[in-house]
Length: 120
Length: 115
Image 1 (cartoon, helix red, strand yellow):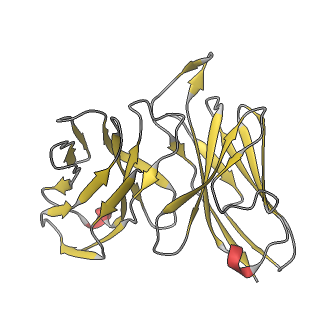
Image 2 (cartoon, one colour):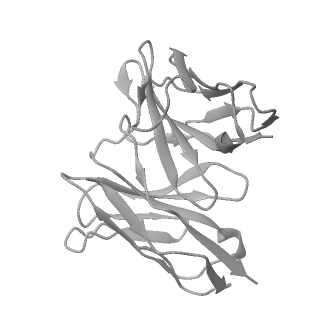
């Protein structure tokens, strides 16, 4: 089956530092990856849509200069939280569509295991 | 717009009890509907889905039927186990082919099953 990994799974950092989170599709290619944020006891909120080779599309209210997204290849998207602050502490989850040989492999998204960010 | 409403948790049941988690939606067009499960410390896993009215999704003893007339997609299981303890999310995609469109999630319902 399709597997999506995220690295790191947990990260603790000091306020003001930047943190990079990687999202990889391990056994399939993904032209589109989504980044979600999950607050405690809340639902997942879409942050941005990441398309390979183009700029990400951010949802209203999400600061694109703070949450930098790069989708450099068909198997990797990165989310960088710049100058992190305690209010950025959250669970970040990515998902990817399935693409093989230029054709859509599946009509289902596959989710990564998530990255828990704690900013002190 | 598109939205999903599911029952507030937490839900606590004894092993072998019957489970229902209600989910209703609002959407334009013909959405696909999903249930995802999140076990403690893990990411979301697709539990089941339905892409058109009257479809029934099923997996691991869980079932949900796409009811267009009531805009609902309630999750049911006849006999829950301790291992079913998790958070369950109802979600929709505005389109039948949901691979490249973001999902809209409900707030999640935490289920605890006690032996």
